[in-house]
Length: 364
Image (cartoon, rainbow, N blue to C red; front, side, top):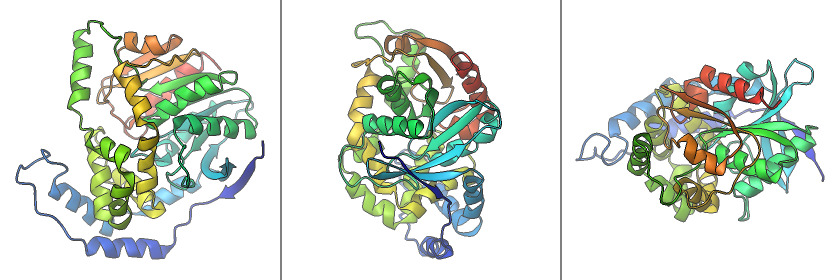
């Protein structure tokens, strides 16, 4: 295996930020929805206020400094450069941990967790292919299985023979598959949350019924667009910062648990500056059918290595432990929390860090 690794530092040209502000101040706005509220999507006033702050108050350089506080690399795997943050612990022999984000998030979610984890772990945080500063796949086939295989190569190339994996959103799927593909080296995976559905023909409990109802009520329109026509939506996401802001902020707000405007705009700005609205969406075309099979319970695809799980109150889906144990028979740690949503690394980092430490101490 060839392994090419080059140091990397984020340095966005000032001209890109000037162009962004110009586009924001010259935006064309639609009328407000006659339905009012959120019934037909994110409200006009919400997006206008976010974009006003984006143009006049938000500071990208603060996010850039947070990234550059961690050593970063471009590691080429299968011809594709992968952006990787690598925060080593000062503790000799620290346990290695690879953390994977999802959509509409980025490595900026996990970067803030690094100081909470490096007391015990060497932390590796890659950007998914087509996301952030990673390369954009030019050919089909970069689904969660190929990404997991790339992660195994990265960890081997960094010299780690035994390691753990954790993730949110797409990161749960990548980490689960990694625990199968590289089971000889993956000591355990921690999932936020595990993706599992009811056994066919089983009678759900009241809590399971509420979880199913919440999943049914959550809008999947974005997912169907990403799955079927990521190229079509990509033109708007690449050319219009207000369009990108509305598309991402709708989910960052409705899935999140009180994210601040700056936390929302950190994610939106990274997608804008890297031009990854379309390339990130294509992961749905590659892998969402597989994920849907896991969520519905139609597939279990067992993961036999040790597993930990965190279930946050505002998350959708929220599988029960008995559902999860069909697919993950090796569950050793299960935590439920009365706060936090889909982005716990931003919302409740202390809770998530405590769960990661508690689970991986059982396998390290």
